Length: 259
Image 1 (cartoon, rainbow, N blue to C red):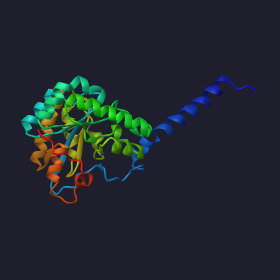
Image 2 (tube, rainbow, N blue to C red; image 1 turned 45 degrees about the vertical axis):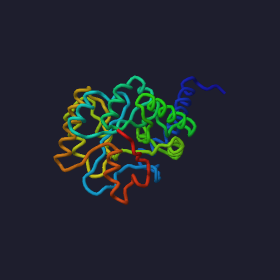
Image 3 (cartoon, rainbow, N blue to C red; image 1 turned 30 degrees about the horizontal axis):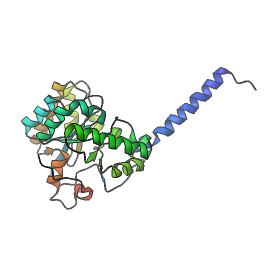
């Protein structure tokens, strides 16, 4: 039986498409909520009375830990949590250590910014441990929190995070709206138009460093004007500690670190 080259190509294209869908199915489920996992070491909302939000920035294609952002936070008298990719940490040692001295948190955003839910438990664990080591060497502090890239979580990711000693942070559902590559004003508008008490705000840098610094300054100022307390996850944990229903209390990973 002779199969034409065109039919053979179509058949292999269909097989490849099915394989890709199956490979990324855990991530797709996590994004749609179909694969949501309830777990005491996962937090996606601050259970705090009053207007409290956590302010975080996530590494990826751009570096969020830059002098302009650190200066904006210092002038605003607030801290933030930076989720750092392990592969970029070595080149950022000086600025990461400065962030720690200023009271900011430096946490795990995976070693290579991979979709952890599309990999095995063993691969995830190796990735997270590699990121922990790289961040600890660069920043002088070991991470306690994991923000999975793309918000992709399944049971293998949770198991690997637990084995690595990391609690999992999932951003508030609207956080992808905060990624605006070119316009600081639009970034500010989207964050403020969505922010609600208890949110974990994740800003994905896409602006130039100075523009990002200006945006962070304005976001903090407007949050304060609307009566919000804003700060890093660690600082938020201390604020939430008075609330017996605090998710931070369930996780139990807020360390008493010296500054």
